[in-house]
Image (cartoon, rainbow, N blue to C red; front, side, top):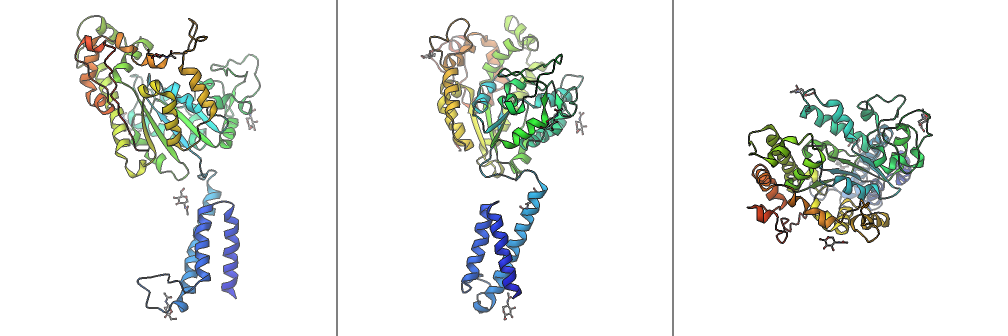
Length: 435
Ligand SMILES: *[C@@H]1O[C@H](CO)[C@@H](O)[C@H](O)[C@H]1NC(C)=O
Ligand SMILES: *[C@@H]1O[C@H](CO)[C@@H](O)[C@H](O)[C@H]1NC(C)=O
Ligand SMILES: *[C@@H]1O[C@H](CO)[C@@H](O)[C@H](O)[C@H]1NC(C)=O
Ligand SMILES: *[C@@H]1O[C@H](CO)[C@@H](O)[C@H](O)[C@H]1NC(C)=O
Ligand SMILES: *[C@@H]1O[C@H](CO)[C@@H](O)[C@H](O)[C@H]1NC(C)=O
């Protein structure tokens, strides 16, 4: 009688679970199916000498018991964590360094539509606060902070990030979230509080007029979205993010974006002129002192990028189906194809919004190619650096970043002529295929 009662109870609990988790129920129903056909040998090897009819129900029952306690533990987990992996929910982390086109690629996800929560460089605040008087950061301390903040943000929890925002948000309200307007999710109606007269918004939404950002509202909106994506140029080592890949509440997809280091340097010399004034000086006259701090920094950057990519390409178990390497040059030349590949890798549908955004922003059409156009012919952009970076600088980059260039398939140049010869492509066809 008691056994029957227990079985009905288990069955009832199983029915409740159907609503919550499908694979558990399939396991439980396997067990129930076994109960109905007790002659099925449950332990084909070790216990096969035992008359099955006698022991089957006992063994089945104990198996059901363990299934039951698994359900119980899962249920406890449900109540413990706000967030449990929702089937199909993806957490996309776009990893890059500055001047690699990461804002552009970030838009692939920012434009996805209503079921994506996108954050643009939230780690800016963390880096800023952890910057030491020397101008650098403590790599160990910042790696840990980056990891923890990212993990929380993927779970829609802004509390740790808040502690890095200056001035400190009051009641979760801030006027200073870095580049808020670059995240369409943070400028939506549901996250837009009324404008307050006299309060200056450093990063104003472009799509509508919003007051200070209420991070509680942002978190609520995030929880409603199916997928989450974050773009960051601040993570140095992919390996540091292993706990995210292993967090059962997350289904993280890492996309590492790389670019020819020679092109990156050329671009930085223009974009960050003050920081790169030494390079600019060397470009104009004299030799590049190879033991200079700037050169060491360049090498350190290249080595970090290479190390992360090597780990990703090696496909350790914790990264399996979680890592994709993308070259900026391939995105610039074949944006639609690469975007499609990225969406396929992530495992979410490629929406018409993204498609039309890419079309609009990669082709310089008649109407938009005027002097005021901000849209660029991206195929043309890819090779532009070759006419602005002096050969001697390119040679230094090749020397200190050689292995990185090789890994990603960027051809070395051996002369000024080769550098500026447009008929020679410096981009080798390379397939990083592991999806
Ligand atoms: C199977 O049943 C026999 C006889 O009833 C009993 O001695 C034995 O301990 C049972 N085995 C298991 C695994 O419960
Ligand atoms: C419950 O959650 C913890 C941590 O999130 C995890 O390690 C454990 O495997 C989960 N238990 C079950 C039964 O899912
Ligand atoms: C960097 O931070 C770590 C952890 O916070 C600390 O143990 C270490 O001493 C720091 N290193 C330096 C050079 O400040
Ligand atoms: C921020 O949003 C939360 C949730 O919508 C709300 O309860 C709270 O009152 C808001 N804070 C302010 C200061 O408006
Ligand atoms: C962009 O530039 C490339 C290379 O110069 C050229 O082949 C292509 O036709 C251009 N595309 C558009 C839409 O102007």
